[in-house]
Amino acid sequence: MSMGTSNTLGQQINQAAFWSAAVALATGVVSVFLPLDAPGGYEATASDRVAWLSANSGAFILGWINQIIAMVSLSGVLAGLAWQIAGTHPLRAILAATLVAISMVAFFIPKFIAVWTIPMLAGAIATGSGASEMAQALLPILNVSAPFSLFTSFDYLGFWLYSLFALLVARPLMQSSVSSKITGAVLGVFGLLYNGVVIAILAGTIEGAEVAIYVGAASLILVFVLVGSLFLFKGAVASTD
Image 1 (spheres, rainbow, N blue to C red):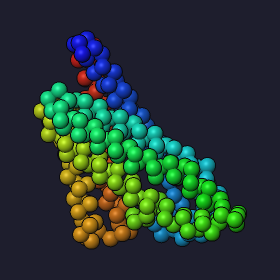
Image 2: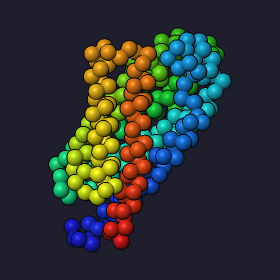
Image 3: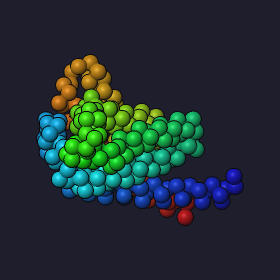
């Protein structure tokens, strides 16, 4: 690969990562206004959830489509960060990019289920169709708030893979520009904190009803990663112009 081709590729990756960060931040704002579950979340009963889903399926689907866009754009940012260390730490960059790719699969499965399957299950139960008995058995398994459901297990797996990515790239990023150092430091905090939460959950220190609170708090650190990466990628694009 020639130097010109390499610079062009690097510029395109940095530009794509920059806009991915902007989109991810925008979807975060949008998510404040779109519901992801029935009121009460973890405490909502099956009948309350079915009634709410039947009346609000459109908003529910839009909320989870927004989450798909957020996940894809955030993964694009992380892939861009892996590219930043490829020149000095190629093996770490490959492993980090692989973790991002696997995390996208883990995230996409439950989010597609939320858009496609859950509204159909609620509709089948509400109308009392021939498939309602099966739907009644499946809907609790796909509860979007219970930390032990199949749905949330995939989501938490995706964030755990993100945290492993963070631990891989944090130190190499801290060896570059100021914005890169800040982004790397915040990623390191996220990686350590999220794995600490996972260990606490497995040890039984965090109760089931509190899992979403701790996981959500740890994941919010990624917002600061996005802000830092905007400056990082903007600088990287400018350096290749």
